[in-house]
Image (cartoon, rainbow, N blue to C red; front, side, top):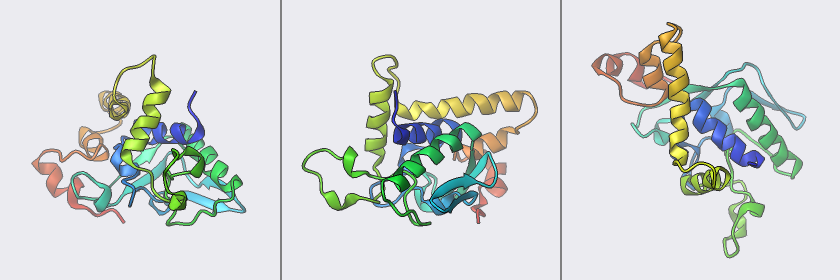
Length: 188
């Protein structure tokens, strides 16, 4: 039921544990450059590796510290299709382009038309996801992060993903040990 932009947003939240605010605040948000394994060549999107790294800059992080997470192969597929749809519509994507952008066809009447290539707002992301989920599901779009946490807990149970890494990729502060190791802000 979801269009390509909503699928990309849902993927980034549920498969990477990103907060809607990370996708966009209207003025800033996740940029193409924050996905270093995403390449654009001849108007085609590809990933050099999947799952791909998603870097979250400190200014987008709730804790004020940069961190990274990953986007699954399925999430990369949804994101690729969405970005290629934008290219097909005439948009020129650069490293500074928003990953999830305001699109003129998605804007309500009365909004300014000069917002093309601008970051979406967290409120708009959440509303778009709510429209897709309802009337079947009545949980908050933010709760999609729990999908990631559940999968990471399974990985922890199978001794494949340490707890500290799950906490780090969800951008939680963690215990004191994490403050001196994982949460040092060394994402480059």
